[in-house]
Amino acid sequence: MSKQSIKSNRENILRISTGGICLALAFVLSQLKLFEMPMGGSVTPASTLPIIVYGVAFGPVWGFIIAFIFSLLQLIGGWLVTPFQVILDYTIGYTALGFAGFAALKTNSRSKLSGALNRFRNASLIKILAFSIVAYFVRWLGSVASGVIFYSEYAADAGYDSALVYSMVYNGSFLIADLAILAIVLVVLYMVIPSSNIDNTVVTVQKYTAEFIGSFVLVFVGCGTAMAVGCDAANGGGYILTALAFGLVIVAMAYSIGNISGCHINPAVSLAMLITGKISITDFWGYVVFQILGSVSGAGLLQYLFSLSGKVDMTGVFDEAEGEMASWGLGANTLAGVGGSTVSGFAAGIIIELVLTFIFVMAILGVTDSKFAHGSFGGLVIGLTLVLVHILGISFTGTSVNPARSIGPALLAGGAALVDLWVFIIGPLAGAALAALVYMAISKQKENAEVSSKKSAK
Image 1 (cartoon, rainbow, N blue to C red):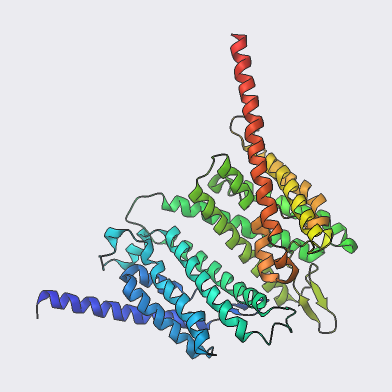
Image 2 (tube, one colour):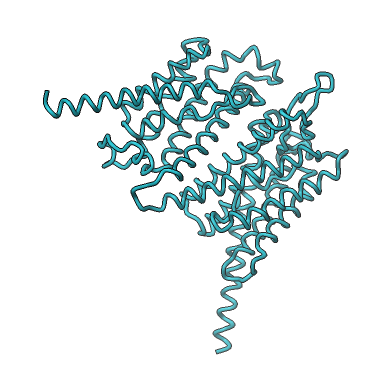
């Protein structure tokens, strides 16, 4: 037997044996349930991770094969309902994961079989996450399509008029939570495993991780406070407590992760920084993704802890007869204070969120402008400004001024929070964009006036 044949056989044995290990690990993880989501579905501890790592190590063909086999293994879990569901809900989505890791490799690295761990570390984490998000989205679409048939008899019992909406919320809740876990594990592995290359990826990962942590803490503490004390007319004291909770989180995070990522923890703030040229378009999207993942993780942990401890979510509805939550609020933003999900309610919500975000972002741009010295009190000023807008806004919309803060709780709470969610995305983004444009205009005028004054003095 030639040396080439021996080498080829060894490579095939390595592919097959490693594939078997990855499949076994992925399947075991898929059977472990961390917690049950409010809208149904059990979250597993990143069972797709071994599939992605395998795709990095051995390329697309073998990655597709292993991912496809993994999708078939899911049938052992007893989830087979119809062939239609299997194809849409598992096979397409999981098979797409086979390409996620490989697509992140540089072209000259794809032909090398050796050094799988090193190849994983030297691959682009951002691309791995991007393709993983696409794969999860593909699976979500398939799950929704199959769920329209499967969940048609359950939608009404869950309080939904449409099986499509119920399927979207039901499948989206646990798939997003699972994706958040995957992202966390990938980031941790990426930072722990040493790299043979010198690049700026670690710095990027550190920034995105900081944004994840900040968004997680914001939702966990801010929304958690609202859940604990309530923010309705009967619990008026909850207004100021919740406002302080959100503001104090910003103060704490500004002085802890501010030097790492700038402590945006808010897609609206990131948009303003993009418009003013302080971050790149790549960092903008990276920040937004990790801010949303942090928000979803914070909301998920809150729901789990409140359920575990038997605490009542004061922003939800508690069923006295059953002794359990009839529906979770999770501190989500809604339009209940402006008339609900009506045309006038949507208009009022957008205007309120636009104006409050404008005020908040203007303060951020002013205090962080390097052309004007403000000392080391920037974090305190920004935090107090968030308290300010919350004091007024809570009675209207619960105060978002932050799409990520709204997305996490809404996705898990469902109901009106999910229906109204678009308002808390469009309003803050529009307010932030307006604030950025206005601030650039007025600060430029001041700068020009100072230059003219200096020339006149000469």
